[in-house]
Length: 198
Image (cartoon, rainbow, N blue to C red):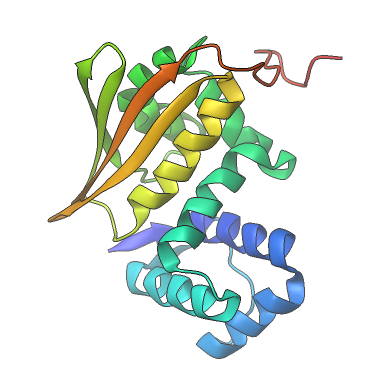
């Protein structure tokens, strides 16, 4: 199993921007790959992703699951990867709309990057305010990246939500979402044409 280099490249940016280039290089030196940067158009072995996360978590003194959740948050909140936020925000005008659009996310992403293999996502609406989101055929820990993305998007939309990783079953990871308040705060501005509100 291989993973698109764009994912590795984004993780590299997350670590370098958040913790410093020196720490990133130290992590890569420990992996002894013969290079210290990833190419976004290449593909890399999934085992390398596991080794990278374990080594980064060890070096940064963070649990791997926490580090992956932080990475998911970074993908939504950091302006240097604004395109990721824009791809996600095209899913709806409020957080509930966004959740209902998750099953289409893989297809939308492949319109931009045809060989980008995002997980297949299934949404189960338990009630109008409670959802189960299952990611299928994913490497261990991908659900925590999705959890970070979902938490950050709740803030982005101005919604108050309680989210919890429900664990792993085979090759699937499930997240529960309970909406507590749809308009808890003021969300970040978003415009289809691009750019922030003045």
